[in-house]
Length: 70
Image (cartoon, rainbow, N blue to C red; front, side, top):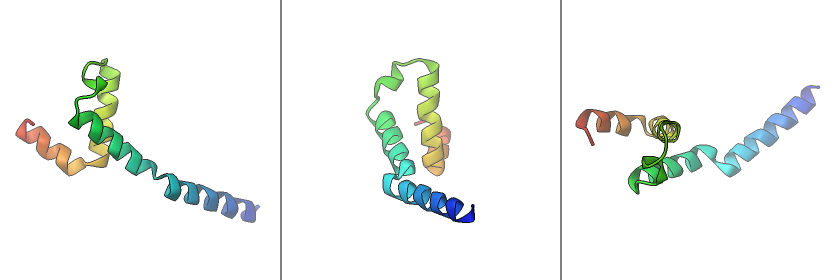
């Protein structure tokens, strides 16, 4: 049982390192915000998704932007 858990954890760790989902989320949110993608014309759920993703990947920048009004 322990061998199966270790093997599964190794596969998951490998896939997370290989696919880099955090980096992909960062690039996607950055592009949506920077280039004013369809999210600006979308509904509230799309806008909230992009803003939450942006705040998760760049919390300091998002906080500064919030207070500067940019």
